[in-house]
Image (cartoon, rainbow, N blue to C red; front, side, top):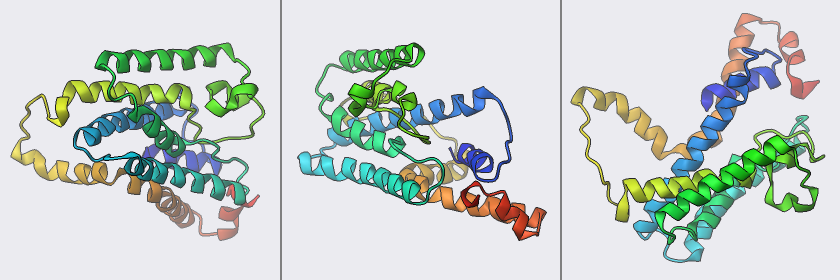
Length: 242
């Protein structure tokens, strides 16, 4: 995610394209968001099994926080006049999908899997059929991207994205039935020191997501400034200031 966003900032802000590969620009967001949403589904199952959601207030607190952070991005990108804005990004999607998916946890696990596959299938069909969905834009179907809703970035419509969460709940039930790990593994001692930083990133994923963009942007700016100390030329390359 951090590497992809760094490449995106180079392209969108500094007009420096590191690759023209569709596999990178189209495939990477699908892989990254699919992983995020699937893990969100697994985590949702675990939290539910460990009684972390004792009522709707706890569920709203968690999902509302994530969705609220997404709305902050919408506000920032709209007010900043960046030339593109976040209408319904990954944080909006995770927040709303988490709230909706919570009520599917009591389903049999194979119903979660079927719901996930069907939702992804509907999204894939809608993508290739280029259906007009102005009348049902509330559901943020994929074709809305080209339905006159503006120049969007970080766009992850609820359909089909919520399908990954359903599949994550299924995997949670298979891998962690009753909230307990159903498999055994042993980590070599020599690997523990290498894994510790990764565990930190995993436990603080939301924080990392929120702070990594300005940090990466600052690092790119510093590197480009060191390469070309003429600050005026650097500023001219920044799309935000054109």
